[in-house]
Image (cartoon, rainbow, N blue to C red; front, top):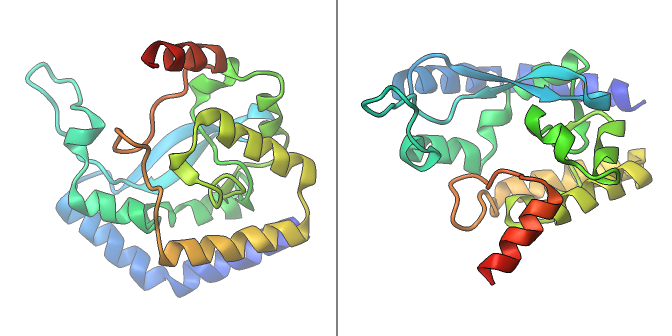
Length: 206
């Protein structure tokens, strides 16, 4: 039933918002350049890699040595607008149709995080990752990695169709009043370095 709902809602979304998707694609090309779609390998169900699609929200500006500038320097007001209202994530409904994502599940993070998880945190990969999830409606990027992973694992252990419907509904409400787009001091969110390392760095900062 979850897969049927994923396919039906994703197909309807892509059809209804097709004019918006085309317009955003044109604006991304004009304001940020090519490629229009940002594609990055992420871990899916059981950690199997797949390519996640998003509208690009940063420029490709580089320093004199040819290295990409920091996220803060490459993020434009247009890119921030796309992220604030999650418009950059519209192409992910294609991932859902392909069966790589679900509408609801833990957000797919970076491949390099896989060996950094504790045994408990790794449980988040026992279900398909999602466009939205329990952590996204309970703090998004304003909470710590540890808090985020606890919420992800809670979802894995308590998932149900009713819970998914609740998360989808609350996600829609939050899109109308977006907040917690980025972590304090970061244009997006700090990199996860492993539970033990993150804890030791916080103690040092205190």
